[in-house]
Length: 316
Image (cartoon, rainbow, N blue to C red):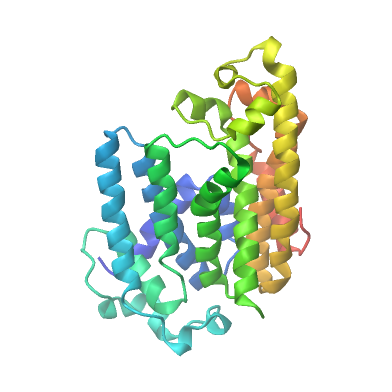
């Protein structure tokens, strides 16, 4: 399989599976769009292992294999100076699909790893961040629960902050890369809290409770009430959801400071993804009982409108 086909498969996975992120990724120029699609496709593979039906120990073993595969790519060394963030939007010939012959061997049947090898070569992507994502998925497999918000913060940074830091390798930042990574991490925390609130019911059905035990106790919410609508528990649950939503708003406010540090198209991509999730958060906060009746989401039209505003430089 050549690199063109590998990237095409990563984009197919992204467009079919990334219900929210795809609206932002499509706003990027071609080289960055392909690179971020490859990152999403491998992250999706990790999530699918964690959420699959295999026995827990098999999941942990498969996650370990994924970790080794991606860290082996990272061990190939940093990209050349020609593919630094400042030149990422106009990549050299080495970053185009025609360069498939220069790729390290990664298995002809694995298009995602083929594409990731090219991404690692052509962009300063911190491949070790995938290892943090895998740490979070292993915690899921083992049924880890969280006593305090600080405990949950570790998980959010693993599964969402890591994606933000990987994305920065594609976007490039100016002028302070370290501060940009901190802001990307904060934005990831905001998105993950939104995810947790949206998925309360289905996560409980899967044996997972992400809301901190101290918060459940504070609002007198029995975790069993997360399984199905219970009028007697709704007052406390509504207050709990609003409390967590306000916490997420603070993380969005911090994380969105990243946008001025990005080029226009990268800022639009990030703004679209964050804007979709932030609008979803406000819908959840306005209708907290609805999370116990099914997954809440925005319509495709609403998501497209958020993306258009982001492309125009307006934070939705």
